[in-house]
Length: 308
Image (cartoon, rainbow, N blue to C red; front, top):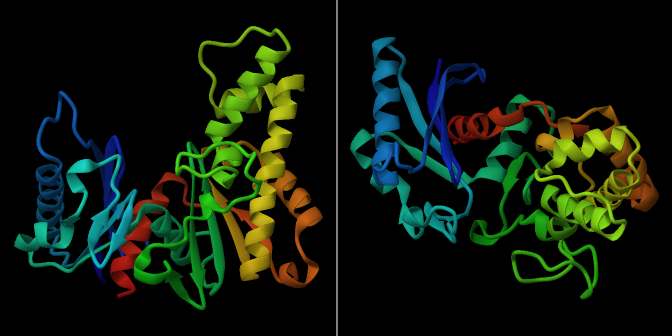
């Protein structure tokens, strides 16, 4: 049996696991990337995690096959680039930083690895052509084409959240463009629209609004929440339909916290996509929810190790 150390490095925390080749998580925990409680440099925290996990495996006579790492940035030939949320890692080659452990190190974008996790262990297990989207504060995505994770030339592509679904008058996106899928269909965009509708109708604006709150108000048939969610479904479905027309995947997998809010969510997307997509390209495509939840990143990082 092969074993891998898998890290999912986010802007505020690092999730880490010890995973076997069957996708069984044998140990899991998390640490803050950097805080008052953990003021160490991020590279030291990563080394400490790897050291702890190698010691744990050694105590059980489990041989570590390699280390898989997901980061919220571009990874070009092992170099982490444009790591705005993790500036300490920007332009760093993590495999060299971990050379002391004498283990192969594999690194990729976190959304890519979430998609890979779903292909190897989750909702798309055994399939060859998959589009994966994760809907949260932004929108990330991954492509698994002809049985391989696809990242474009030098791994610079598959920014699926920046597919432009509206013209120049669309919402301004964090990337600097207008009309991106992320700017119209992310949870951040949903919250912004809901606030605008409440304000326009002279309604009281709650002090805390998140996707879960809007879904609750939607289920209660509050007018503003219904309008905001309908806009969300329409915009997300435009992006999904466009991706199906381009790639004709076997499945489109949709993840992220809001996707877990009930069957109504995926059913609405299926219905809306059906209005926009070409019959020819969508003939073999089904749209399903992700299955791995917040474990997808680590399981994808482990899969990256096992599939090299």
